[in-house]
Amino acid sequence: MKPFPRSLLLLALILAAINLRPGITSLAPLIERIASELALNRSLISLTTALPVLCMGLLAPLAPRLAVRFGLERTIALCMGLITLALLLRLAGHFSLLLIGSAVLLGAGIAVAGPLLSGFIKRHFAGHMGSVVGWYSLSMAIGGAAGAVLTAPVTQWLRDDWAWGLGFWALPALLGLLLWLSLPNRRDMQESGSVPVGLPWGEPRAWLISGFFALQAGLFYALATWSVARYHEAGLSLLHSNSLFSVSMLAGLPGSFLMPWLAQHFFNRYRLLLACGLLSSLSLGMITFVPTFFPEVWAVTIGLGLGGSFALSLVLPLYEAGSPLAVSRWTSMMLFVGYSLACLTPMLTGLARDLAGHYQLPFMVLTVLALLMSGVAWALGKGRCD
Image (tube, rainbow, N blue to C red; front, side, top):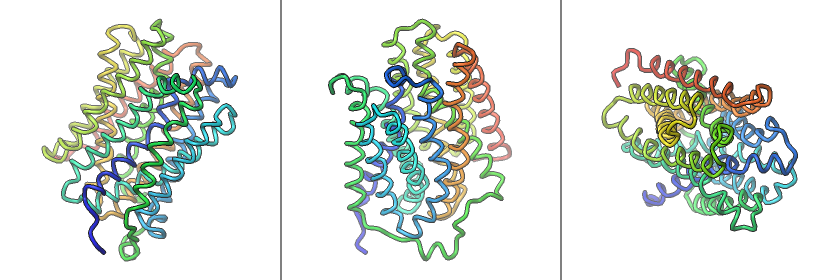
C-alpha cells in the first residue's frame, strides 16, 4: 500500500480531536436558558452532559473489537458520522427528547473514537508520541474552548435561536468526516491474533490510570456544566460568568500541548500529574469559598490544572502498552471506567444544587475530589523515576 502523507494523517487526527468536545461544552453558556425555555429542572437538563459522558464510558470497550472487524480508519470515520448526525439533530433541539437523544448519539461517536485515536497515534507516530499527543490534546482543548466561547455569539448571529447555535458545530464535524473517509483503511487482523482484545482488568496500574482519568473527567464535565451558574450565583453578571468559563477553557490550551511534550522529553510525567492535581485543588477551593476574589486568576489556574491533567492522562496508556491494539485496550478501559463514573458528577452537582439551594456545597465536594485526584497521581508515581 502506498504510504499516505504524514501531514494529512496528522491533520485527520487534529480534525477528529477538535470535534470530540464542542458537542458538550457548547451547552454550558446556554444551559440555564434551555432549561427555562423547555421547563426542565437542573437534574434533567444535566443529562445533556451526563449522557454523552456515560456513553463514552459504557461503549469504549467496543472500540478494539470494531477496529479489528472494520479497520481502524473506517471505524473512526463512522464515529465522525455519528457525531455529525448528533449535532444536526440539535437543530430540532426545541423538542427535549431529540435534544437528549442527540446526547446519546454524540456519546457513542466519542466513545469509540477516543481509544482508536490513541491506537492511531501509536501506529503512525510511534517515534514522536509526546509531540503528537500534544497536538491531539491541544486540538481537543481548542474544540472545547471554541464550543464554550463561540456558541453564544453564533447563537445571536443565527436569529438568537439556541438550537441553531448548538447545531452549528455539525459543520466542523462534517469536514472531519470527509477527510477520514479519504484515508486508506487498515485492519488489525494479524495483530489481533497475538494480542487479546479484552480489557486489562488484571493490571493494577490500569486501575490507577482509570481512577485518575475518572476524577479529572468528572471535574471537567461538572465545571463545564455548572461553573457559569456558580459564578452567577455568587453575584457576578452573566456576561462576566460566561467570560470566566471561556477564560478557563482557553487557559487549558497551553497545558494541553506542553504537558505531553514535557512528559516525553524530561521523563517526569508523574510529578507533572501531581502538580496539576494540586493546582486544580487550590483553584477549586477558591472558586468554592471566595469565587469573587480575583476570579480571573482561578479561572486561569483551573484551566491549566485540568487541561494538563487530561493531556497527561492521554499519554499514560501509550507508555504502558506496546502495540496499537494494546494501547486501544488500555485506553478503552481508562475511558470505560473513567467516563462511566465521571458522568455522575454533572448530574449529582445539579441535584445537590437543587437540594441545598446553593452551589457552594457541591463545589466543596468537587474540591475534595480534586485532592483525591492528587493522591492517585502520587500513587501512580510512587517508586517510578519516569
